[in-house]
Length: 354
Ligand SMILES: NC(=O)C1=CN([C@@H]2O[C@H](COP(=O)(O)OP(=O)(O)OC[C@H]3O[C@@H](n4cnc5c(N)ncnc54)[C@H](O)[C@@H]3O)[C@@H](O)[C@H]2O)C=CC1
Ligand SMILES: CC(C)CC(=O)C(=O)O
Ligand SMILES: [Mg+2]
Image (cartoon, rainbow, N blue to C red):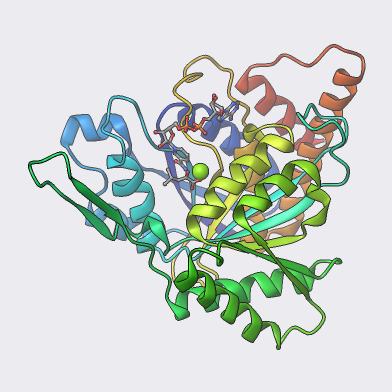
């Protein structure tokens, strides 16, 4: 049976434009001979478009994106655009409008890959970050008093509905993993309103998953454990801001943010899910061929798996694993591999083809 994947492609800004072509290169290799055809639509969104037209994304473009099976995004944000215009007006608009309430961010350490940790041990956990609420709602404002006593507020929104559905997804994830272990990360000793809601929901939903061992860490302590004892984590469930911060740290300990993939999921399938690297547009290295495309390529593997194409996903993952092994071998002899973004993409695409 032939199947067509309708993929919306948003390279965005900075290194997003460099890593997305590598992701597509590997995706095409993975689909060769599978009977699945790929139909891509490029969306011209990001800083250049904003400078040209003043638009972040139009309602018509959003509707068009909704007709696709999935979205592959690079990154958005550019120093030439006021901070927040693209991050809120484009990226968060997509996540909110497409109800991406699960932001899934796996972290796995490939033994031998360079890491700042002296003894990384066995790191293999997944962060289930809430994606549509919390401090990222844009709920707040600024009171310009005309005096030095200006007031700015950002209010974290946590609904029982929103917390319950992401917590349930996290329990399902923990139930499906061998360790059956879920850690709620929050700060309920201070954020007593939101924190206690999260804690109560985890307790209540947890009664339906008796096999899952549940524990709790305040977010500040969690940042310590990620460095000193990352092996203690299996599945972490947390809110939008804490999950954002923890997953950059998770990238750093597992070999660099250029390796970390994420899926913005609408698990009920009402809207297309969006796959992207955890990192941003990295203006400091943009245009130099220095960006590691592995995060985007791994996001492609997550996308294939989400679309039910497990064999193709496994082929991409195996090729990424092989590339990690090659990196580790080079590290071991003191001669780290130095390759451009497209050379890494070429090597992984070739490995996918076998
Ligand atoms: N999902 C998205 O579209 C995101 C967008 N951003 C935006 O990106 C812009 C830059 O943000 P930053 O805070 O600098 O975060 P960033 O993630 O772009 O960069 C942080 C550091 O990681 C390095 N880095 C990132 N990706 C890399 C890769 N693939 N290979 C090698 N090194 C890599 C960068 O060179 C930089 O030193 C801002 O406009 C920000 O708002 C930030 C995070 C996510
Ligand atoms: C720019 C933010 C809205 C996104 C971000 O940093 C993230 O999702 O990791
Ligand atoms: Mg982030």
